[in-house]
Image 1 (tube, rainbow, N blue to C red):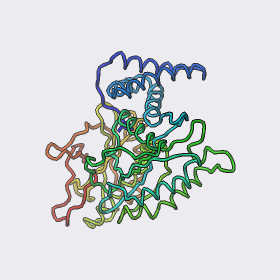
Image 2 (tube, rainbow, N blue to C red):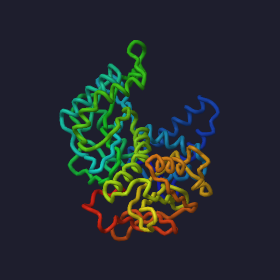
Image 3 (spheres, helix red, strand yellow):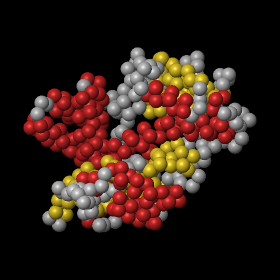
Length: 403
């Protein structure tokens, strides 16, 4: 998905160079008048690439700007996401603005988090709750009848744009959603993960999409909408996720909410791992040790967190804490706890909150290796070796591993 840092190594092309140049120019602009000029140029180029499904050029431009100008990277990333998740269409002489929504459900369990087709009753409950608590009075909706895992979501800006166009037309015209949902990828069994309902909200151009955009007396603050949404959807979602604890986040723009949900689930993944180890091998959190290391090819793209029984060198379990486009860590500060907002500080706080007291932090950057046999990520031990996480041999029935 385009919410992650790109790994493209494509050589520069004229399209890439123009995207990079326009992004740098927009980042350097000193006025709104100039902003609008460069925004128009940048949007025009990006739209051509999105319509021709040229994701490689977009990724290459993002890579270049990330390396040479972080402000330009933010500009380009925001423009690409905006054009992928929003669209203006005309129907019966009326202009409509449409926005793709990701509706996150952040869940954790000791069993398995479901995904798959949404019952008609849940789709109807979602539409009613959105209209009553979140979207503006004159808005229209199209809701995909599927509960998505993150690996089933569109994996690029181009794919996201296609989904936005399909749902926007269905929302505005009131027609059926034409999507092929039968060939969805298999969902990886993990203990803490977001699930998503995906929808489009559309409104006449110039009209609000959300209740917090409306004028008084129809205006409703986001916090009020969130409480109303959570109350309305608790029972329908509980029926979908038996054996799971979950939190409903506010329906919002696609890319923003994908990042928010993934960040929200990271500390829950640590807590779920500790709970799993306690229930499976009977070790209290204080009896666990953890090793944390940063992984990436040139810079940290993720942290990998190993768990073992205190006093043992065997790694029994592992959790990944991914970093996203707007997060970066200098290679000389990979284990620096002085910044309260740093990833390593958040990881250590989450471990301590879960009851793990013995935490070892590596200061080096590891190459992100995978197991040659099963493809699972390898995790660091105290000696700096990357090893496969293996549960003790006498562990009872194996449950889904969280990687």
